[in-house]
Image (cartoon, rainbow, N blue to C red; front, side, top):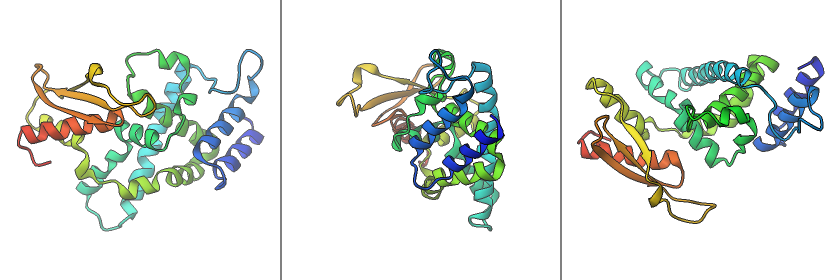
Length: 239
């Protein structure tokens, strides 16, 4: 992006009168300005798969740094172990849940070639936000990106309770036991509710296939968290 585009991007992203989806659409219009035309509509981010992945790599590091800096200073006396647990707020699972809860149209940030890669799975949602943050950092610098991230995430960060991260607890227990990580899978025939608000059911299994727990939720992450909570109860691990 040229200097004018970067200036416009900064102004739009830090505009308190615009919601996230409005800022997202503004970003796409500005970013695509050089290549948009009849064959390249600006409704979606026009970017190659390799560039998207590079931005995702960068954005992941920036997001982690902003979160770590926030936890270091709020409160300033917090211990390292507790800060580490709180970093779960920027995991792919947490980001996906936040995106769904805030009703962000994250599909605008997912190039078709990335959406077709089955290896990404659910991580594509959190990855899209990380790629977006990566291009912001590259375009408007760290301070502007930090302001944007905290404006978007500070309420989530303040309300985040690591003790409710049952997925992380179950994973940590398996690692402590030297066991392979548990595997989550949806039970599609158990999906219920209206199309606009489905109820998901997920099962978590040990690597050898033994069922540890089943859970339900209004989104994928919530269903997985519920399944992990049930597994912790079955394994008699303090949840």
